[in-house]
Amino acid sequence: MQSALYVGLSAQVALEKRLQTIANNVANVNTAAFRTDVVKFETVLSKAGANPVAFSSPGDNIISREQGNITESGNPLDVAVVGQGWIAFAGPNGTVYTRDGRLQIGANGDLQTVNGFPVVDSGGAQITLDPNGGPISIARSGAITQDNNEIGTIGLFSIPADANLERYGNSGVTPDRPASAIADFSRDGFKQGYVEGSGANPMMELTKLIAASRAFDGTNSMIEGTESSLQNAIRTLGEPGK
Image (tube, rainbow, N blue to C red; front, side, top):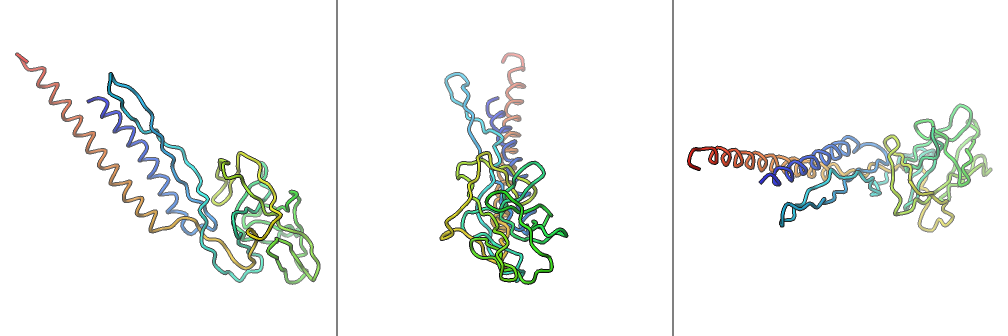
C-alpha cells in the first residue's frame, strides 16, 4: 500500500515538470524560431518483495527540432532557413546556433542577430557590410551581394541528430557535439525576406496542458484514497480484539 503512495508522488513530480514545460512552450508561441521543450520520462524499477514496482523519474527536458512555419516579412535582412540547417553567431561563451534569421547591421557594419550578436560565416569569421552600401541580396547559399559585389556568406551548419541541445536565450542552442558547415544547398539553404515562426502549436500545447492537469488531479485523488485506506487500516488494527 505504501508503494502506491510513492508511485503516486513520483508521478506528481513528473507531471509538475511536464506542466512547467508546457507552460513555457505556451508562453513562446509568438517567439521567432522557438524550439519547444519536451520531457523524456523514464521508469525507475524497484522491488517490494516479489512484486515489481515502477516509479516515474522526474524526466529530462529535451529541445525539439520541430520547425515553425515560414512567413514572408518583406525585410531584405530577414532570412528563413530551409531544411535542417542552423545559423551561427558568436555568443559570450562561444558559438551559438539559431534559426532566428531576423538580422540587422550594427553601427560598425557587422551583420548581427536581432539581439546584437555577430553572425559568422562557415569558417567562424564575422561578416561586415556597408551600412550605406545600398540594397542587399542574400542567395540560397547565404552569399551576400551588395552593390553588385559579393561581400560575405552567412554560414549554414548541420547539428548531429544525436546531439543534445542546451537552450541559449529563447531561440538559440548549443550542442554537445560539433556542428559542421553545410556545402550542399540542394536541400538546405536560405530564403530572403522570410522569417520562421515558433515551433509551438498553441492549440496542441493547450490540449497537452489540460491533459496533464487532469492527470495531476487524478493522481492526487489516488494518493488521497490510498492515505484514507491506510488510516482506516491503522484504526481497525488498533481496536481492541483486532
